[in-house]
Image 1 (cartoon, one colour):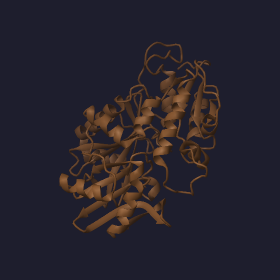
Image 2: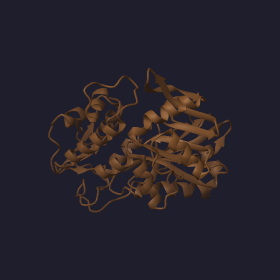
Image 3: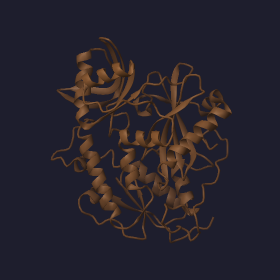
Length: 384
């Protein structure tokens, strides 16, 4: 494939973050000029946005306390792991992305898409309207009493309670409630009237404690979904993170846990993708990957998304739990010999651009990424 010296990418990100490093390495490895990095701190404190003619990748603003403070408009940084100001951070993200777009650059992930995906209520509505299978959701919930009342009206005894603007399971509760008996499984830790993320999943059975957590999260917005029973392998339940690039599922990781929250950073394990595919069977697997493509098609001018997909008990049905704007960090997962970042660079060099953009390498149109192949142990190709 010819490499054009005209393909220059600027990454908006936190310079020391491994997401930025991995994308830069992928671009340089493909023969492109080393991407410039516009730090989130700079964008949030007055740095000029990239001008027209620049390709811009927007990466996660997370894992930087000062960026979080600036997004929230707070005077002091949050304490490590503190769950605070999520709605304010989302509003700050929206303003920053509007400013980024004002420079006229070609954005590889669209501000409106990022804003939607970072609001679980809005993203759920977009997916549902497009016919993507998603768990049923309750309407607006403003506190624990309202949550329990809404569950009774719906006839549900098990729900997932998610902060509308959270990520990485921040503030998520898997709640089973029947009468006065409650069990909330969550990584939330209470400390001196504040809430924190913990790397240890806890179980709360005291309804007063559960109510306090929900009531503290509610002012920033909640999204509440029916708890669907996930399929399992051996003694673990499983779900998938599927990365979709230019409309095609390319990489997947199985997340396997002994409890309902499967995020890998909470001590869960990477599962066996081949075993999941075998358990689902070819037809169910193909249908699930088609659903991931349909979910990504809700954001057609964004180069990549990360889809959280769950097969339900019996493997014959599936649903999308979330779509993630910054869900492409799958270290060590290869498809056609490329990780998620190299696949995105390859796709850009094949001519992909958002609608209205000019082809990056002088070719016309939008070419799909080459089909993933291989079969090596570390490869996780998942295209249908």
